[in-house]
Image 1: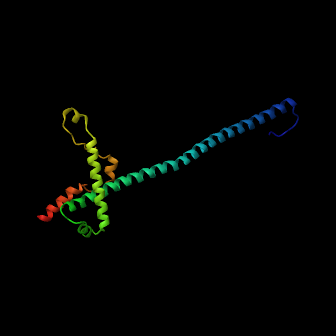
Image 2: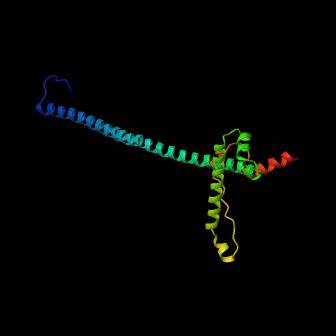
Image 3: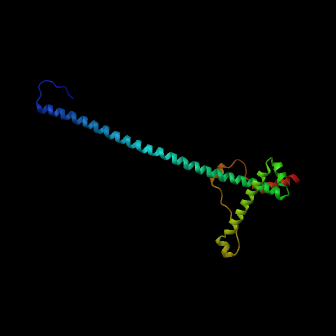
Length: 175
């Protein structure tokens, strides 16, 4: 507020007070607008913060599912390698001894390989492409290539089918 000095008319005094009040009201309005802007930003960011928990839970669930699928692929491949040994006449006991695992673990791997082979045969039996229906010839369904993301996650080196690897090992041992 302006200092009261000398002789002032009521009209001038009133005008000065109204001007001071208008300036103060404008400052309050500016401050209130700034507060509303900042509070709006706060509410939005708190909402985003709460969504992070949901996002994280979804990512963890997806990662666990991907890991389980990947683990299953490796277990089946390991089982197929043991199945190749078994098909060449090795006993469960001798396979367990050579692989330094228990017989129960050998049986578990063999069962996984058998289950995967049965599921694959059933899938092939139920899948009949349109071209096979029209021509009378059956075509083998081949899975599509893995996504680039999956390829980057694979360990370094070439992934070889376990039965091919076992067959190659037996050839090199005989030579």
